[in-house]
Length: 358
Image (cartoon, rainbow, N blue to C red; front, side, top):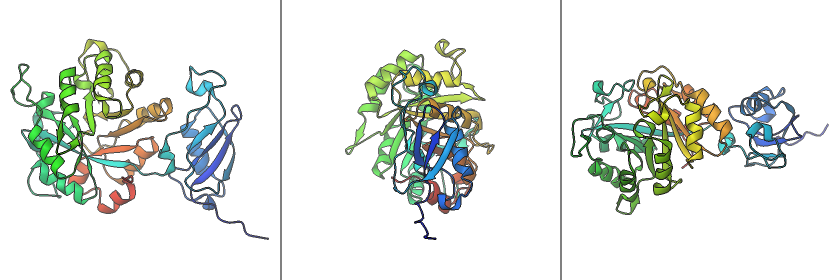
């Protein structure tokens, strides 16, 4: 019998029994289709991404690089859609299992400190296997040597966790000198400087040093008064640069603002989407630095189902490569990591395996 050509790894077509919809995509976290006689991994993936639909048929595809999408309609799954409206394509994360690893520095008095469960009064200068000392530029250069070019900076003094600064409210101004130094070495910066008003958002959005601007202006729920303010931030900064951080503590919204009282984490995420947010961090600060795993996976999965094209980044509690895989499975595009890098629990081989292409 003539042997058929082996299909490219991961590429399959799944036909569901719901409205005749067809799922085209690439399998995440599976062996090549030629090695899946029962195709159980494909069915499991389908069940996870579309839990209300049952896969009826699976077949390999011979076109490498196929973009995942749905053909057909399934308004019940996505809600508020006309019966004849097209199903939005799934996020391209299905093309592989990689996530972009984004190292984090918690900045306090111009030094990098180790975050522990969000108890900022207990933060102390970082001790790292990557570099001696706690200088932010030295640590960022170590990340660059590992191939990690995007950096998330939590400016704790500007957020309001440090000593009284040079503002009327007692908070320090953003550490512009540190941002410039990090930009000089080629880091792509995401900055959380505790945005509370449009003036501060405009200030960060306008910041530029030697032709380089801040790539991600972070608006954290912790310092966000209400949804209307978030909408203004999106308008001022632009949806392509504004990153909303859905901040949690022990699974609940990290906010004292009356506007967020009684709002669930998923509802908060949906409110942010309605405000025009396209990039979102999901972070439970109680998990930071305690090596207990990432507690936000279920929320990330739910957000991915509601928003197939949303850029989702999560972390807090990443212990090693297995947690990166779990983040990928939950639909995350990026992983915030700090302690696992400093302690050597994520190796260079791990980074090469999981870091998304630039």
